[in-house]
Image (tube, rainbow, N blue to C red; front, side, top):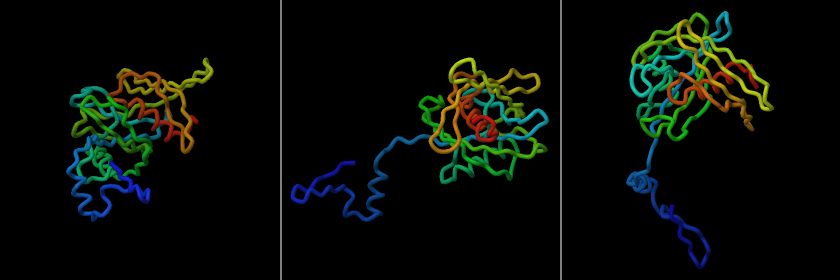
Length: 215
């Protein structure tokens, strides 16, 4: 934004001074600012006899068709992000009436081959009796047993989060911990296999938040 200085007084002024709010907004709308697409992705966990399970969907469409991902999708115009998360969760898995907590914002350049996309990540821990049924853009919806192991063979130490589901190939995320000044630690993903987009990062962060077992 351009600024002008009154040489006599040294006061800095901006072009919108003297405008009404309506005039300012009209001028603002004339400018073409690049804008990202906004999505919501949801990590749904439930307790099981083997520990904890994570719900993943198999994508029915490109990009990453047939790969495993968190349920989610695009936020509609004038829709709150958490409302979009609830809607997408119901459309893709049939799950409703769950409490969703945000765990991160993701906007790394190139994370979505369709273009500039930012995602809000939400997570929840539901009752073990809750099940899911694939719908909308999901070709399948399954619960994966999630288990993290720790390797202290190097100075920093790394974790491997393994997701297993019947006859499917295991999904793996290897990461170490990045401390945050405020809030829970987050995962620094070193490598992963089997996930669509950057969902290995989202899964690792959500697992840390929900289980509280790795800190």
